[in-house]
Amino acid sequence: MHIEWESQPYASAVTDALIIYLFDKDERLEGMVAELDKLTGGKLKALIESGELTGKPLETVLLHFPAGLSAKRLLLIGAGKPEKFRRADLRRIASVAARYLKGRGAKNIVFLAREGQRSAADAQAVAEGLISGEFESDKYRARKEPVKGIERVSLAGWNAGDRKEIEAAITRGKNIAESQNFGRDLINEPSNYLTPAILAERAQAMARETSLGVEVLDEKRIAELKMGAILGVAQGSAEPPRVIVLTYTPAKERPGAPVLGLIGKAITFDTGGISIKPANGMEKMKYDMGGGGTMLSVMRALALVKPAVKVIAVIMSAENMPGSRAQKPGDVKIAMSGKSIEVINTDAEGRMVLADGITYARQLGATHLIDAATLTGAIEVALGVFNVGAFGQPREYLDRFLAAAKDAGEKMWPMPLDDEYEEGIQSTIADIRNTGSGRGGGAITAAWFLKEFAEEMPWIHLDIAATCWNDDAKPWAAKGPTGIAVRTIVDFAMSL
Image (cartoon, rainbow, N blue to C red):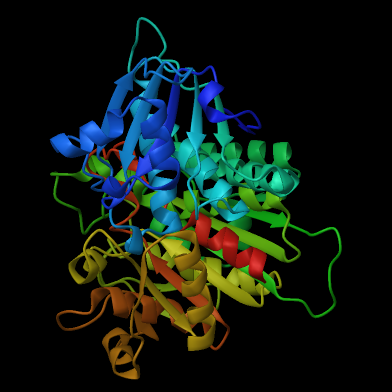
């Protein structure tokens, strides 16, 4: 999809569709809405008076061959209450427009900015929404003819004097959203097409395309580094584990500048191991590499937007299978840090691979850490499917990250790490156990387990288990991977 800044008046734009969004108070017909109503001979006012056009969030009304416009169609999308409207809503509206029109044969469209939403950041949000809305999860479905998407989008209504800034913002938005879709495609891959070794190959290819540094550790090198936690998880599978290390180095490194370490859980399939999961829904466990896919997306985006901070990503990839050599409940594993871990439940494998990843990122020079993982079902019990569970230390570091999440339009909620929860991971035979004792607080004890390896370093843990996957298609997104947290981590890295 090509996205460009449009200079000509929107009324004379020859296009398959012109898109405008309306608020639920636009019955007053002011500004651009009044202008459009006049051009179309009062069509908007008539639709509002009939109740067909209310402005409620994401409502869609399509007019064919509207009088007064050169566009073949006019798509009206509801934007809800103006006092509640945020940039995230603008991004979602753009996604709705892309998904709605591509199924109706539109090849080129014009997206019209309204008064109050004409900044460079708004243009970036629209570009992100358009690209994100194009993603589909039906890669392996047989078709007689390929479905063609929207080829060209023009953004109209922005001030001509801001052209360079707007064009740069559009490029930035495209780079971030295309990177997000890259990760969504990986997360959607069936595990027979995406083993740890294949994931490493895909990461290497992406790194070559974007000039990132890359190193892949095979099972021999992993053993040499004494990463006993990930080796324990992987030992029940015929597929060997891989550790993927990607490095972004800015053109000018500042002395004493932070080095951001990103750690992703990439379990390409999770049966639960000996503590096997129920069969119902197990097919979704291909998405258990969602944290790794997120961090690969972030690194691709950072290579293109070029922040002034060094970033090292460590992706920990394995399969968790119940083979004859699989680790068993009651086993003890020695992590790379030297800490001993009592395996209580083999389905608590994500925190084990992350433990070695955190230790290795620190060894490689990271001074600030962020990990992302589809870690616990308990986070859905706590927050539902609408918020990422965000843990971190110190609180100032977490608050700065949550501010970036708010700017990026991704919902994240701060979770506690009170000292009392530490008692839940104490083992009688080893340093720590891999699940909490007692009932409740499972997402928190999992985070406390990871804190044992981050120690006192600035660290954020994102539990994306409930937000990484849409069980149903939405007007703005396909069923399947969401790409959650990519925009936030990219924005946060830029702020460093």
